[in-house]
Image (cartoon, rainbow over all chains, first blue to last red; front, top):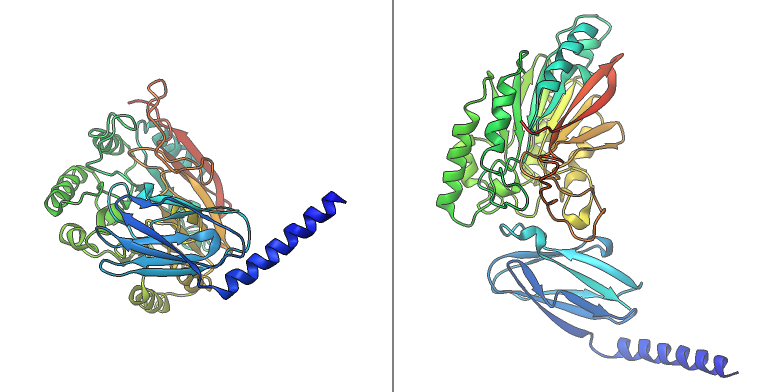
Length: 115
Length: 300
């Protein structure tokens, strides 16, 4: 019985949370890009939660690409690059700079972790 | 024919300490050489790739300043000379300093001039061209995309690195379309490029942003083979009937696609110097690509 109550409570919470997310403005996550790192380099999200990833570069043009999620953006100097996104599945999704930015470019990586 | 292949194989075995991929036209399913006419006008060329002149990293290759020179010495020792040599990009290691970039290119060019062959073709890699959209490369090596014909084989060099996003670009695709329109459908075509044209490992940036558009243009041609670099290892993949072969590097190997969480050069192993660098031969068997042989690199 306790198990059923817990499951029902969790389901209600999830439903409420989904409605809450859909009614409010998406959470904004600011990410800074510079050679050869993102800050933060790990972005934690929840399934169903709409967010806007907001990128700025501190030095030169960079990119943001998550092949597994089909997300790609160019981060230009002096601009804010916004990437709206709502995760639909859990997992760890690697991203990398998709604009060659020098020696070390290959190590400019990060991950979106959806829980 | 078999005798000639044996001679060439012995020549390959002489090659030690290099990362040259030796490519026989006779192994490319080329009708001009092995067609019904029975006329054999075969030749071979060498593919060298990813030399990264200027790279410094003792943990990865403590012989970085001599590996290229050693390779050239070994290529020059071949008794049967290749018709030509092609470098498929990343001739130099990238630098933020435009002056240093040009110095590295000048040095590379001087070293490559020591190759005892009639013709050498160059292609840019992202390390050569992506920071200045190919400006320094063009000053030293000329066009970044071009065509040439050798003994009936149509070679097409494509630039998928001058755009820092790793794209061929609409203009070059339009150019490719017009070049292909001049070629008979049945003609043998070899495409040379730096990045893989297909999505080999997108998480590691081992792809070309608009590579699908290039492959779509090539698909109507039944005799197309692609040779590329970038991934510092041998890899063979088919998109339909089009075979894609990557070459090993002359500086350091990289791990197999997806084999490790993070892509990084494989550290130097003093007990196995030059491991991961090597060359391959592609041989013909009854008019089709037959045995593909990888030869280990032995310290010279």
